[in-house]
Image (cartoon, rainbow, N blue to C red; front, side, top):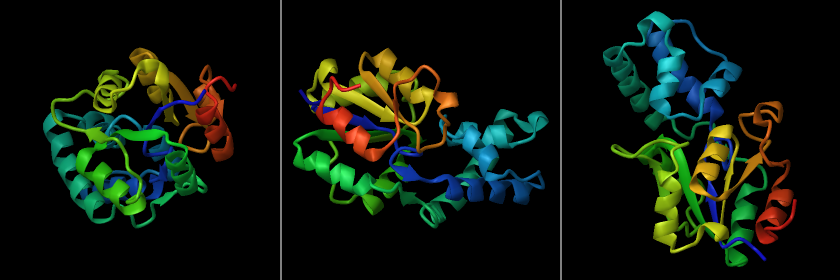
Length: 219
């Protein structure tokens, strides 16, 4: 038995966006006269939406709502202009998506990245993949790990929880899956180490992920 629907996280799962996100963070920090952050520091901040990323990047005493909003606007402006300077799909991901299409498995993208950025990256890197829906961070909708996005995808796809699996690179994704009543698979090529994914069901390669999806009982 295979899954009928896969909900994919974006950053750290389908695409390596770390260098572009780090550059955008440091653009804002330099402009505001704050210390810069290296890739590993930014890696640890990613996954909870860009507002949270910007807030964490700011010095602790400068995280007031109004100032965060100002810095966030600058971040989005810069990032939107440089969104795929360095971003690339992880090796094997384009082929995986094509193989899943050929296997008759439907797919969706569920990301905490703002919606316009999510749409731009999907249209650039996976223009021929017929995703059921591409859902990013939208005003009025909660971020993962709130399970609302799981219910939304299932409703749009007309799929049952037993037919769906979420694939992500963080415990946030795994908590989203659990709260939404579906299985979660945590890939280890993204922004979290296996140690940081303790307790999750780990997947170490694209080939292994394909087998887990097309044979839902595989472990």
